[in-house]
Amino acid sequence: MTLDRRDFLAACSRAGITSALLPGILYTLASQSTEAQEQLVKGPSASVPAWDKITPEMLDQAAQLAGVGPFTDAQKKMMLDGLSHQREGYAQIRALKLPNSVAPAFVFHPQPAASAGPRTIHIPAYNPGGPPFNRLNEWAPDPNVIAPAKIEDLAFRTLGELASLMQARKITSVDLTKMYLARLKRYDATLHFTITLTEDRALAQAKKADEEIAAGKYRGPLHGIPWGAKDLLAVKGYPTTWGAGGFEHQTIDEDATVVQRLDEAGAVLVAKFTLGALAMGDHWFGGQTRNPWNPSQGSSGSSAGPASAVAAGCVGFAIGSETLGSISSPSTRCGDSGLRPTFGFVPRTGAMALSWTMDKLGPICRSAEDCALVLDAICGPDGKDTSVYPFASFHWDPGLDWKALRIGYFKSAFEPPKPEPPAAPPANESAEDRSKREARERAERVRRDYDRKFELATLDKLKAMGVNLIPVELPHMPYGAMTPMLEAEAAAAFDDLTMTGRDAQLTEQTEDDWPNIFRTARFYPAVEYIQAARARSLAVKQVSALFEQVDIIVTPTFGQQLVVTNLTGHPALIVPNGLRGADAPPPESTAVGADENEGGPNTPVSITFLAGLYEDAKLAAFGRAYQEATGFHKLHPKMV
Image (cartoon, rainbow, N blue to C red; front, side):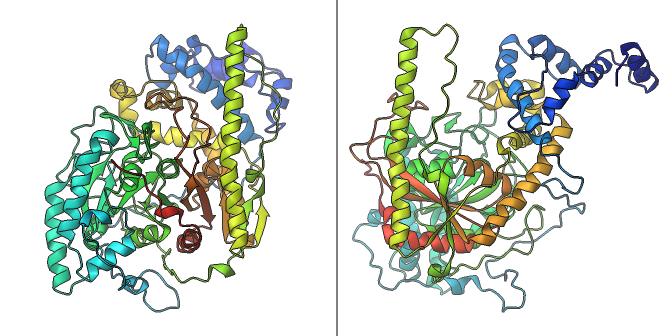
């Protein structure tokens, strides 16, 4: 079919499309060459359709059409590469040729959120055909735990140990709370993990906990235990800063559901911890949060403060959040155990929204069992967050026969990466620059090969435990082309920042930071969002099919699975997996706080276990078995 521009524009006019810009764009798209249209449907391996290069002038015109901007020349320059890469992803999603029967990967509940009163920890979870589930029956104190002579010697103890001492009244909540508050004040000067101490609230809660326990009103394993919240959780009477410039004095007149539930469990909130600005990285409005194992390094993010404080022995546990790695990454860097729950397991009411279809709240602790005890207290519907699945239940069974589980592993993820054809060198690269670039690439391969030894040792350890490892692989899909959904939702969540120019108050302003990402996401078409969501539905189905073959999957923490399972909502348990030795390759940079300053001697590594949707308890039980066999979770940094 051929198109006549004059007839096309006349048809637009008759249809009521009178903008000078929109008909021209429609005509240009409609009249793309046959060759370009054919390229469009060849699949993910096909080259990008022959679209014109995006120019700053196009951005000006598009900004007029979208009703955003105007943008500065520097802002437009930062946006160009991201927009070009984003456009490449459209072709990959279109190449899936999604049938009409594939629905988007989100659920719309048309009913308004119901009001709900406070939930106590005694409310039974959904258990069809079985007896009511009593949370307190799933944990028993250890009568053999001995209180140390100095209360500070408890700083790195697990929740189970602290709870056993608390229940037996061998320690008091007030003493434990004062000890952790003192450590928070002492180490914050080096690690920068605290935004707000909630000292008055904490001491009042601790006093109440001691009185209740003395009266025989024991609430369970979190009763009297000090904890800290990532500062995207609202706490009445205290700032909720989201770690971001421009929000330093923001207050929200409610307690987040997770905070309410931990109050009900008798836990003692001692601090609100740092997060990278608006949940990205470890840089916040007050500086950069550091890694207790090597304070010249950042703690990674965005649950930077919770991970650092737990690792430094400054709280019994903490609550973090993950959208695309924000529990996994800092738990790895700081040597913690982190549980990213199944999406829709923990209500996010009162938490900052970044991505409504990907945000998850979860515990960062010293052990897998600790994570289970915390998740037990915070999971389940609250009648307000409609994303929470009403029929999921958490049945923590530390005595689960894990040897009966089918354990898989992503075989290719444990193999050396296949050599890739050398990329074309940058234009006009000097011989000196080429030498430096090649040296960096060699050093990165050496660091990756060194860390792979820990991953392979995991497989050997599991085999020694009697596990028959079953090789599996992730389904092949264009997962990266689905992630702009997150950026589009985030841009909507913080629309006001972009539209008012307040994004200039955020700490980080590079092309990889929120201000530029939010601006770029404004140009992500709604149709492409829906197509990506439909592709995501296929991904959920195909990844879930893996867990019909196996119960647990072992995987390196980073790599493609991290993106995939955050998209599909599957739970992940990240556990410490040893320390790099004195022979470890040095970081790419040793500059204080540099992004490239990671790894190196005496820093932690991790391994990740995955499970099927709402199989979080099974996941924690297997992680507990691995930790009992290795003891890596008992390692902690030497604090000075």
